[in-house]
Image 1 (cartoon, rainbow, N blue to C red):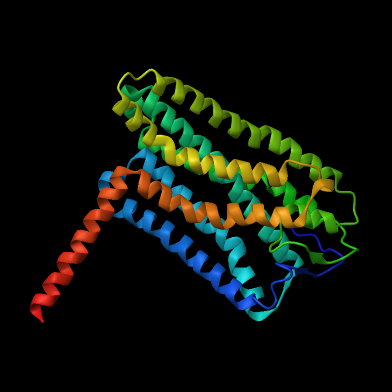
Image 2: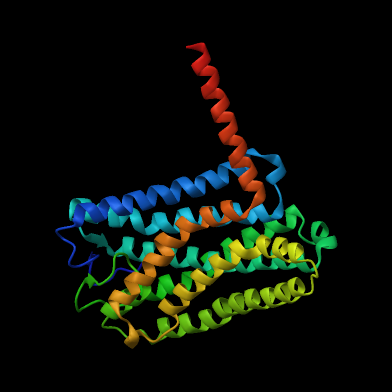
Length: 318
């Protein structure tokens, strides 16, 4: 990715204005949130990696989702923590473009992955007898790799176009990281091409994954309603309820932030939406999937039993 020399060398990230007196408590709050995100998602990855009976298509996608959550959060929160703890609110031009590129690419990869996971649930519920044949492990790994490649190639155009913009007005980014809309708002160049590319890619990729996910769940709900047993309906719905919650929160925040004209940008609202998909969603994903997934719950319960037994043995020895 080529970074063209701009007329400025650095930006100032405003962060959360009005919290100067609560800077350290806010910093501590974000630090705890970041550690919970890293710890929770790494736990999911470690459990799936360690237990061979979890090496299935669904858990392959869940590992990728956890890695995406860790990576996307790590693009933004460490810099925010540094700003809150040291008051050094500058970021280099190249660093800003790089942060923006990786964050948007990872968000795009998550949208694609969530649509793939919706298809996985569709096959599992609507065509269970052929699930093992259709969603074989090799095929699922290929789909995961494609999601990563497409996302990073798709957003490279944004990075190149933004790196060529001129920033001759304020250098203060009214956000807590280099997001697309506040960066464009600072530019004194014509941003029509970047905005047009955003809408085109949003329509092609963003809306395509959204409607693909929506269509998958239309078939899933239709199939579940045809199940006569109430227990059967509950079991079928529980296999996709966690994913459905994640999809709802992800799209409601992401589409609300990016699929609108730059003139409708409201910093306070956008910071709130950004906190939802940067902090809340990655923090909730491990909880949702561990609480809604019977296999993961069994593993966690077995780990607790093993830990209790080991502690009991150590007590007896002493």
